[in-house]
Length: 170
Image (cartoon, rainbow, N blue to C red; front, side, top):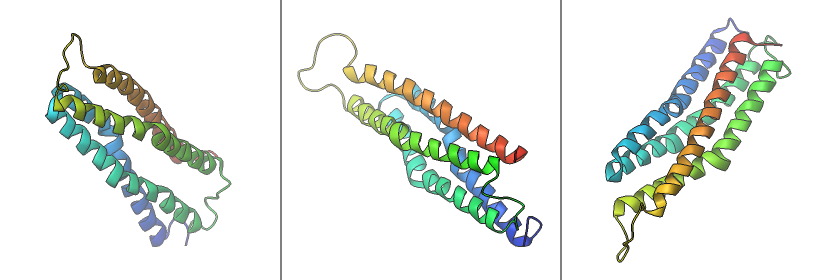
C-alpha cells in the first residue's frame, strides 16, 4: 500500500474530514458563547444548550474517530510513518491531554454554566428580594473565565498538533 495508494488517500480524506467536522465546532464555540452572553435569559440559554449539545453529542464522537483514522494511516503507510516517530508520539500525547482537560474541567464548567443560566432565566425564587445581582451571576462570570482559559489551551493544543502533522519532525 503506502502513502501513494488509493486506500491510504481514502483514509487520509476520512481523517481530515473528521478533523474538520469534529474540531470545527469547538473552534467556533467561543463565538456562540459570546452570542449567548449577549442575549442572556432564555435566548442565551437556548444558544448555550444547543452549542453544548452539538459539542457533546456530535463533535465529541467525531473527534474520537480522528486517532482511529490516524492509526489506520500509520498501518497502511508501509513504514513511511511509524508509531515511534516524534510527531506521532507528541500528537497522541497532546490529544490525550486535550481529552483529559475536556472531560475533567471543560465539560463540567459548561454544564454548570447551563444550569446557572437556566436558574437565572427562571427568575428569582419567591421571596427573594435584596439588592445586587443574584449569586449565579458571579459564578457564571468565574466559570466563564475558566472556560475561556481552558478553551484557549485546547485551541493551542490543536494548533500544535496541526503543526506537528504538517512538519512531521522525526
